[in-house]
Length: 302
Image (tube, rainbow, N blue to C red; front, side, top):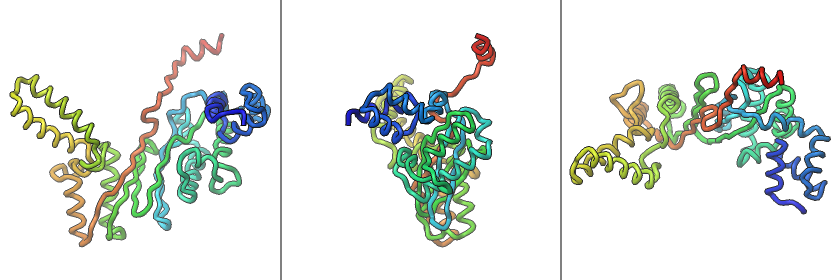
């Protein structure tokens, strides 16, 4: 093989084509990058390449549960405009991808792209490329998380936020549990916890927080022993802000999520433990496209 994994990566970035297509093209050209690009263009595979450089920070987040299989998926697929996110063909594609993840359990996005897309004879990557060509916008499958067991999903704002919560419980079939679980999922959507519980907060994060809070207390003129007590109090407050089970329950702020969970479990005569949650917000951390209509018109006139 006259090419490296990095060559494949560079070719993907330059053309927007899939990994397997790039590998084949480099194999056919004995590693010649320019010839490989020509081959991809000749095959029509690089037709989506021009679109691949455009910012895709809109799109949709779905949270889907297969009750029979007891498997759930949270998935984000991005497009360039909010308009496409409302396109029936795009939404149908995203739901097909979610079903594919439930059935195939791929390890990551690259593995997902290589498997056959649910309801078709094509791979997910081939269907994605077809959507890019027919709809006319760059699209990317950004991320997904697959959870098994007792899972409850919630989608907010027409696909702006998707949440899934996993529970260890023996009362999953009770109506009151379903109401409680939806409350927890909505809490995660609204309050954005960073961690499930205190144990999940990295020790270096707490140490850094202590440093900052100690400096604040000393700057306020407090002596070291008083500053130390103030810091511990503020750390507890920090936990209540960032940890889901420590947070005040939005609907009844006088109790924490932990207390609400214990209360529901007692009422139902069983046990409930929140074991994991996933929260995806569409486009978070991505560069947003900023349209300037005057500049666009000017560039077209040029």
